[in-house]
Image 1 (tube, protein in one colour):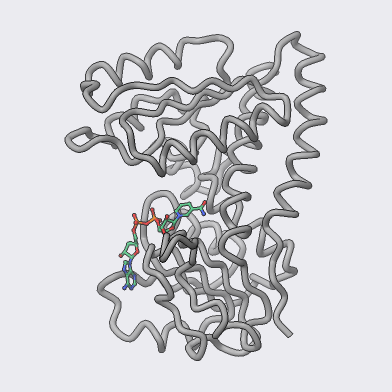
Image 2: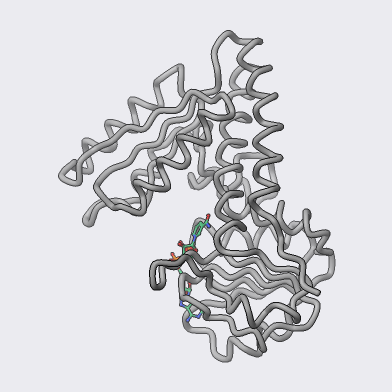
Length: 282
Ligand code: NAD
C-alpha cells in the first residue's frame, strides 16, 4: 500500500492556523500582515501562480496586492519598484515572480529586496542564513517539502536522500534542509550518470527537474518516500517528474501532482508573510 500524501489537505490546515495568527496580529497592531507580488511581463503560467497566491493570502486575512508591470519594463524601473515596496510600511513581505522577461537580471532584482521582507526566502543573506542554520525566512517550496515529509512520518535522521535538480529555489535549499535534519544527501542533476542507480539507493527521493515522468516506478526502492515537485503540462493535464502509476505499490508514500507540493508552496509563502509581520511588530 502506498500512501498518497495529501498536500492540499495539509496546506488547508496550515492556512486555517494562519488565519487565526493573522487575526491576532491584526488586532494587536491595528492592520493586517501585507504581502505584495510584483508580476513583470505576460507569462501566462506566472499570471496564474500570482492569482492563486493573492487569492490564498486574502482568504487567510493578509492584505494582498499584485503590482503588474509590462514586459517592456526596464531593469532600472523594476529595481525602482522594488525600492518602493521595500519602503512601504503596509507591506511586510513580497516577492518578484520569476521568470522575468528576457534580458533582465533576476539575481540583481532578488538582491535588491530588503532581506526582512523576502517572502520567498531567496535573498543571498537569507540563503546564507539557511546554510549557517540560523533563523531566517526559508524558501517556500523546500519548507513545504519538509512539512510534507513530516506529515508522512518519514524518518529523516540517517536516511539516504536523493535530490534531483539543483535550482536555487528548490534543489539546493531542500538539500540543505534535509542535511539539517540529519539525512545523508546526494544531489543529482542533468549531468548525473546513472540516475536510476542513485534513486534505487534512496529512502527519500525529491524530484524537481521539470521533466515529465523522468523517474520511473521500477527505479524506486520499495518503501521509499517520494516527493514530486515537477509541474509539467502534458496533453492538457498536469503531470509530475515521477511515473506516479509505476511508483504506486513500491513507494511507502508519494505526493500527487497536482495536490502535493504546489499547495504547500503557497501555504509557506503565507507563513513567511505572517512571520515577517510578527517580527516587524515586535
Ligand atoms: P529548474 O527548471 O531551474 O532546473 C531544473 C533542474 O533539473 C536543473 O538543476 C537540472 O540540472 C535538473 N535536470 C534537468 N533535467 C534533468 C535530468 N534529465 N536528469 C536529472 N536532472 C535533470 O528547476 P526548478 O525551478 O526547481 O523547477 C523544477 C520543476 O519543479 C519544474 O517543473 C517546476 O515547474 C517545478 N516547481 C514546482 C513548484 C511547486 O510549488 N509545485 C515550485 C517550484 C518549481
